[in-house]
Length: 99
Image (cartoon, rainbow, N blue to C red):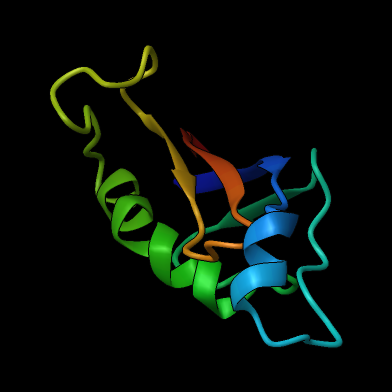
């Protein structure tokens, strides 16, 4: 089994960045619609911070589980999650895919 990871949406809170963030030269390289697959290893190109957020849910899906939060998702073998960047959050759809 593998899990498909799709970048669904990228947000940018410029007002929060301007007020609280020290300027940084490089930010997220992900693009909406970008797809990764995994069998448990971080895919190349997916940042470590996003991976750490997604990994607990990916592990459940890889072990055959799902139905997160008692029926939260229409597809119980999926989850909609966001990375932990409070200035530029990225939303990901993860879905279990049978081989």
